[in-house]
Length: 192
Image (cartoon, rainbow, N blue to C red; front, top):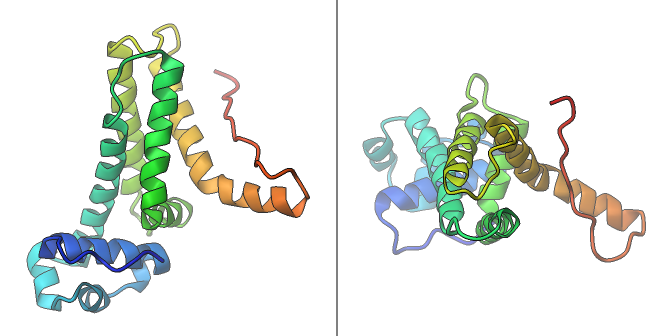
């Protein structure tokens, strides 16, 4: 689990960060507003004041996570070769996720066991990838001879494969006696 919520955040941000950490550890369904309030050093009434309801807090956490992905991607200028830009964007995302293991745990939990009837996070991450793909195509970074939907899906699958499959791959690799460096996951779409 990550360290306690920094005290220099606004009350709203402290509550949202506490919720993110608790949701990542236990799942949103298992975390009460009281638990979030207690963890954030706030009252349940303050949580309701800022977010309206448990569902409002949950959506705010999901939106915050998408915004963290957006910020990591947009921190990389759209200049250079496609390979260099893609590598820099991947490194930026991986850096953010390394600094925020709660985000990784939350996304894993949300994508592998989504809350019933709520696929917002997965859908929003796909929308973000479609938007970013269009930006890179317009900037001349991505080739236009490959359909945009193929590029977007390959990117989503590659990023999520690293996040969702890498821990299992690393464990299996070590258990099987592989050399210290774990192999890289690559994604190829067939039939397109």
